[in-house]
Image (cartoon, rainbow, N blue to C red; front, side, top):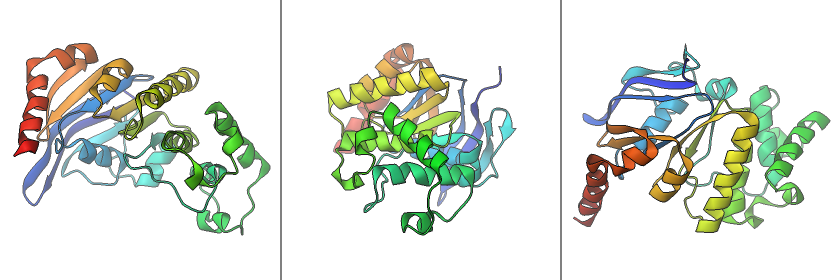
Length: 257
């Protein structure tokens, strides 16, 4: 079966220093796959190559078998790549519903987003219905008209997930989704993602430092260290490998220097 997402031989260097070296990952339909590794391993660089924010020096990115390496970010989103950010990227002085409306307008490819936010482009009834349906599913319906800055961090994470869901993703890329959340908020987010995935069938690829979360949430994982894949396979097996444990212990030692 063709993977929903595949990278082949991705390499990327900065000033002659290799950030990624011949990295190949695959994510199947409906899978939950983790991407882990110590700080500076190249995880974010790989994400940005997949999203189109960076152009790899070599290699390709494929979505459902189609080569999308040369496509810009917005066209990759329209083809089915959704994402969240490590640092929550929300717009101040706008409501929860408006954040999802932005994503809906991007998906449809019509209208000026900033005119919409300034009230010069009235949203259509079907657009509002689509936004409200996602908000209700995330338990945020009562907060639809609240200013985004009034939300808790956990609620903000859900808004980001909702914004990504508005693009009807075939695969959702999550960058440190548990960052800043306590254990209960992390567990709640994981449960919501599992439920939504079960309903909609999208795949998930996540970068995460919380190894406990990765172990409980993902089915498979890849481990990067210094831009090179050092392990991949079922998550429980990968986390027990000596090379993976040494990679994390080594990262602690490097950070202490």
